[in-house]
View 1 (cartoon, rainbow, N blue to C red):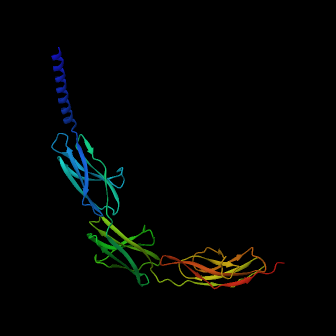
View 2: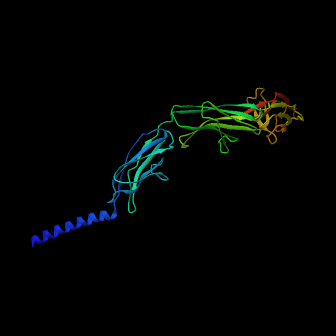
Length: 327
């Protein structure tokens, strides 16, 4: 009886082993491992993985990597390595951002199964490349030369050099223009630009267009700026509590205009009063109310204007008036 029980147990174990092996072959279990990357640079890296098990066949249908800047690899990019058997595989990733942490994991799959390895990480190096936008030069009204230079210690394969330019400092409306060759320094001439203040920045395109670098921003006026002249007029209709001020502004790109006025001749406690629409040149005028009787007030006209991308101020001469005695 004991021998029969032992024989049955042995038989059951053997059948279980056969069933397990058969199940493994049926499920085609695939196993992959993420390996340490290599050849890390500022904009590229070689990712590595190993197919540990193909699931019974000679190879898996596809191998590759997921990578991105999120540790969860949500919205990750994929680079495929094709089919292959057990053993190591790798892929070179280009167009990465310098000085940036990336995450990646290997994957392998066939029709019936898929496996992914552990998530690993790397941080790209700083890019040893300097790009500078030099000061633009106005040749004549509407004709401007953009200038730039670079120092390519990274030994990037440079394809194009040029500039972006437009009327907005954030370059959302920018137009790209390119130099005739890639030598440094480089320049591009813009002709027949409409009047206005423009912004430009140098650009370099390299490594099969996987890298686009931008220099600092420079502002320039396409036309020579007409000097802003502010004139302070005489106060009129002066009463014990009010006075009428006037003045004129001539110039371009006037953003605001008005008067400073104070009871101190150095305007240390001045009040800034804005008259009219405040835009464009022309006359400015307005009445000050609620003044103190028998008091001397000082005032001067001002204008705020934009030139070469900067807000500047022009002032008229200082004048004064004295309110009448209260009745």
